[in-house]
Structures are given as C-alpha cells and as structure tokens.
Length: 453
Image (tube, rainbow, N blue to C red; front, side):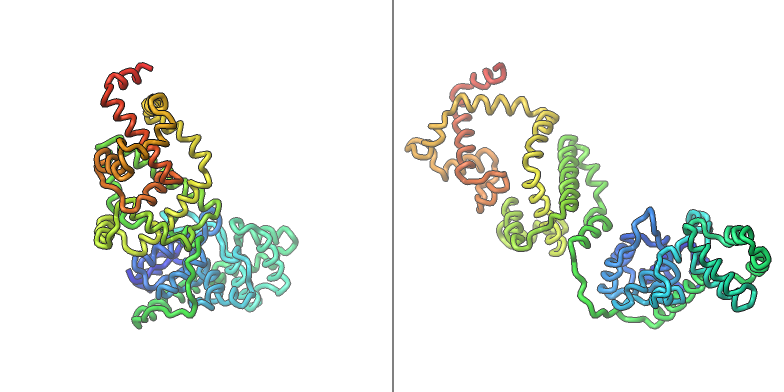
C-alpha cells in the first residue's frame, strides 16, 4: 500500500475516498502507525484518533515513520495535535486547527475531542468539538447574529462542559435559562445554515494536499534527526508487531498437538518466557551491551554451533536475519536477568512443576539411592584412581554414550547453561551418575529395591 489515512467522525468515508486513493483505517491508536509502515505505507495521514480508554498514537512511532522516509500528515483532530508538536521533525501540519495549536492559541486536547457512535454506523457524532463551537461563534459574531459578550459567555459555558456532553442544544438551553433568551433564540435560528465544521474542512484540505503530493511521486522523506531505539521503543514493537515467522504458527501448533507432552512443554515455556519479559519490563531490566558478545557466543555454543557455515545454516532454518537475531539475544539477556533476580521464587515453584509432571517421585528415589550408594570420599578420589575413568573418558561416557551428542567444544558455556557454577560441580554430578549406573549394572536387583524403598 502507498497511502494510509486514519479517519473517523471528522469526515465521511465516501468523501474521503472521492479525494484520495488510499487505505482508510479507523481512528488511530498506539501502534497503528508502526503497523502501517511495516505493511508498506509511504504516505500516512492522521485525522482522527482515540483519546481515553484506548492508548493514543505515540509521538515516537510517528518519529520512527519519518525516519523511515515516510511522509506523515496531520490535521483536524488527533492529527492536528501531533503535527503541532512534531512539525520541527518533519511531520506536515495542515489546517486552522493545527495552526491554532502550533501557535499556542489552543492547548487542551479536549478542544478536538468528541463522543461518537460505532464505526458500523459511520461514527455518528454524539457531541460537538470545542474548536467547531469556537469557529461557529466567531462567525455568528462577525455576521452580527450575537454580541461579543454573548460569544465569550458561550465559549466559557462550553469549555466548562466535559467534552462528551458538549452540544449546541445543551448550550442554548443553559443560556436561555440564564436570561439570554433573545440572543440565544436568534443564534438558534441561525445555527442550521451558519454553523462551521472546521474539523471537516481541515480534513478535506489535508487529503487534497496528500493527493497532490502523491501525484508528484515524492521521494522518501528526509529528516535531520537520528532516531534512537530506546528500551521503551523496543517494548512498543514487541507489543505491537506480530512476531516475524509467526505466519504458520497456528499450523505448527497443530503439529505439536500430535505429541501432547511436547505441546504442553512448549506452551509452558512460552508462558514462562512471556512472564519473564513482562517482569523485565516492569522492573525496567534491559540487556547489557557490554555482555552481548558473550551471550551471543554462549547461545550458539549451547546449541553445539561453532563454525560459521553451521551457524548460517541454523539461522536460515529458523528464518532469522541479523536484526532479528540481535533482538532475540537481547531478549535472552533480559530473561536470564529475571532468572537470576527470581532465583529463590523459581526454586520454590520447581516443586510444583516436578509434581505436576509426575517425575518428582522417580527423581526422589534416584537421588536417595545415589546418596546411599556413593560416599563423598568416592566422589573426591574418583579422578585420582588409576582404575577409574579419566576426566576425558568420563566426558566421553556422558556425552557420547549416554546422550549421543558429542562433547561440546566449549564445555564451560555448556556448564553455565545448566546453572552450575563450576566445572568441578559438573564433573561430580557425572561421577555420581557413572558410579550409580555401574552399581546398577553389577547388581540389577538394586533398581527393584529402589522402587519399593
């Protein structure tokens, strides 16, 4: 798509389509501009936007769009507000509402806010915008329908109202009751042909300007600022953008459902990861740039990927380009930081996990049996004994014969990934397992006794 316009109650869809060839979207909210650029928009027009219950469009995403060479225009309502603030950075503001905010004659967001009905009904207006009321009152004064004093009184009374309740009918009813009956009746009779919809006029003007620029085949927008990828910006992207590679996710999940155990493992790891990243956001934990290369190296080593061609092949199979790999490693850093931060809470929850998966009992029997069979002295003296395995042979026994994966080239990274703090601790774990399995092979009845102990 080339042009995207966010419009709602300020301008009907039929009018908008008669002026500009574009994709017309509902009022803009946070993330919509980012998504539009990702889908190929080169011209973006913002007319209407959400204010209260829905997060408003963020200044940062408009700045990002401009930095990507996208032409961004604003007018009438939310577009006028954002343009007034971002004109110095290259956003194009159009119309009288924009100019009033840009010149600081207006400051409050509620000047353009209204209540309206649903999109299905064409966004019917349930209240009147303060900027429209001001423009209408100014015209009525110029045409000698009302006095300056009455205009000022009307403006004051309208401004005191919360925006969803603003209307000409309510305004006249209130003023008629305050002793301004003659002037109010005169204004009421003039209103059907005299009222001004400045938001509508500005929206129309913006679309005409966009149409003209589109016809001129403008090149990419050039900006003088450098966009900064802050942690908050990365958070918005995570919340807004669909993950790259997710196009076939539903079908892949169907494949996983054929193996219920694996499916549940993947879902639970997904839940844990999502919560870890959410907690990292809450605690403002970020990646550590100085340790990025270390984490990147450990990431590949833990997957037994050492050589460049192997790594490139793996990245291709996982559909990861350089930018996506960097983002993945940054997330890995943040998840790791949460693991460290919540270590004690995680240890407590592991009992629930072991029991819910049904392996607590088997593990308890095994560690109890090992403790009975193997003394601390055996562990300490094992590698010194001439008749025992050497360290190299022990590693070969564990990785090649037990796991069938080959000894990792970078054993230290593998040990760290397992949550062990030293090579010695890892080797003692292997020795204990080796001695236990040797004992089982020489006395098979030990396994039976375990089951009944």
